[in-house]
Image (cartoon, rainbow, N blue to C red; front, top):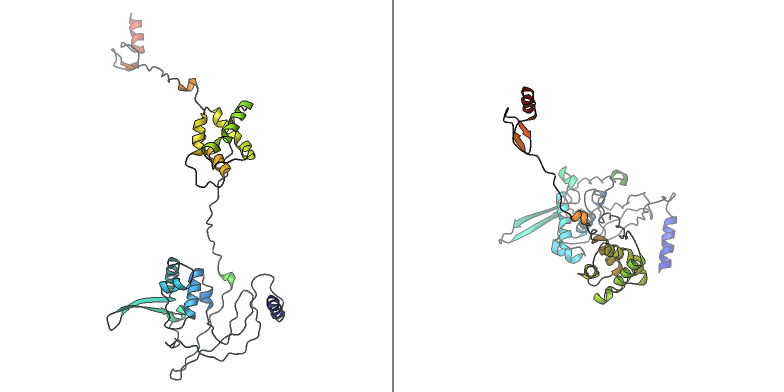
Length: 336
């Protein structure tokens, strides 16, 4: 069956007049004789509607009159949830494709009247409305001859099928077909990425003065973690890679029991990557170096000489004892 399908597709592409476009979609327009719906490009290529709203609008337009198009009915038909469907229906209402009003029946029951307009712009301009039968009937229409394969770059070619008009209804002029809008006219919509840019990973701490004894103690500490946390099983390569981080902790005066508690407390269950967890904790929880004796010594404050009031001129001056200021002492010295 796949071979026959490929042969048929190859034959249809060979019948297309002119060269094929170098990129983009290629449309094969085959005339429909039954079960088809005419959808305007103003809906299928709407620049402000989401893809869910466009799909639901096309689905509602393809249903016969009297079909259930509520949120519950659409959620039971499609995989989207009620929240997504409700948001899509509100989009269609905002752009006048869908109208929902509350009405009271003669028996007092309240119902929701749903009206879908396939051309809201033409309705606002006062365009003619084609009468639609309420009884769901699939009409048979005469199809105008259309070539078997028609190609239009980046545009859908739809065969024009006349709608049946009841004999009692007056003849109405056909509504003008909307002009296809090329894709270049719609500005590209930039969707923000859901994944935020990750910050670069911090390097593993390194000891300032590495030594064989420090390396041996750090290696033994990391290899002994599985005794206290059986899920933290590290390979020899992981231990050799993480030894500088544990050595930096030991060099800064951290006790082995304190390091062990920091690396084995509140682990995720189950830990998928034990080596990554140990690396992150060795880097993020690294304690500062122990302060020296000079840093712990009390701060000596410089004594401040208080202000005094001169007994001769009432001027303020700094002196450990009351008396006269410099000028008054000079004057008293000259007088003496």
